[in-house]
Amino acid sequence: MDSALAKLDDVVKEITEEIRQRTDRGEVASYIPELARVDPKHFGIAVVDHEGHVAAGGDCDMAFSIQSISKVFTLTLALGKVGERLWRHVGREPSGSPFNSIVQLERESGVPRNPFINAGAIAVTDVILSGHRPREALGEILRFMQFLSDDSSITIDEAVAASEERTGFRNRALANYMKSFGVIENPVDYTLGVYFHHCALAMSCRQLAHAGQFLAHLGRNPTTGHSVVQPERARRINAIMLTCGHYDGSGEFAYRVGLPGKSGVGGGILAIAPGKASIAVWSPGLDAWGNSHLGRIALEMLTQRMGWSIFGA
Ligand code: DON
Image (cartoon, rainbow, N blue to C red; front, top):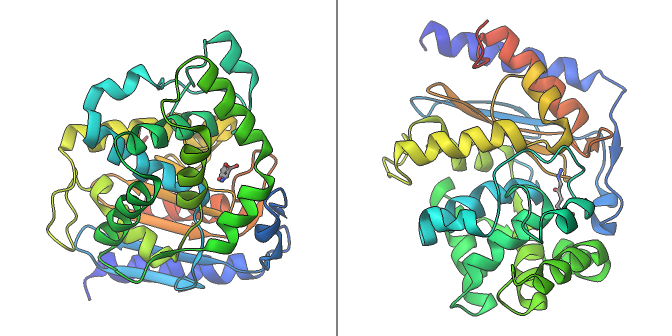
């Protein structure tokens, strides 16, 4: 094993041990009842380096609900489908508001600020759905995740999707409000059905870190050799992850971690160290912004110890 990889392995081991001992775990999301059942003590981490080597620790092979992390991949798919025309449906500026906020939509004529807040991700899902039946659109998203991770065992957790279908009143409000401005093309229930289901994708840190590799390596997955997007598109998706990936906690994440990242209320975070690694962490307890509390701290430890912040050591 070369020395850089040995160092990474040691750092991942140290972080796994240090996080295991922490008692400040944050609060598990409860507005989606099925997520409230998850044990806050879980912690997983997986780092895939530029040669496809994996350093992993803790519950790195346990599947969890990726929730909003799926928005990175639906953005990638929608850009592949309609290219720059996507930006007629959604902006690309940080919102400075919570992920499920409704107020900005009225001021901005129903066009969401960015593809990672809920309203923006619902608009992106609607673009993927257009011209298809919901089942086909969802199949396309699932197959894309399996292709990126090179793992056909990835599935959608139907219990989580059903739980959000029953309780997603606020998303329903956002979608109906956008529909009133003509921003949503398909029947609201169809678009939301696809959205709730892709949020309910169940993946482990190892699978997620593999899926993110193309973003760390100019659009190409070094493990499979597949070109997923052009280098320019990978760079731009990373830029949106950096500025919008943690909602109104994006500044804090850039300040402390210094990497493009995307969080989900299941407690996962996908982070990209360009040219170096794709990283997934999971700790179900959330901070006040709805981002994984210990997940962020683990990433801060990793970037500091490896010197991986995009802003320099
Ligand atoms: O729409 C929702 O509220 C959830 N399916 C996803 C939200 C989410 O993951 C926000 N991330 N931190």
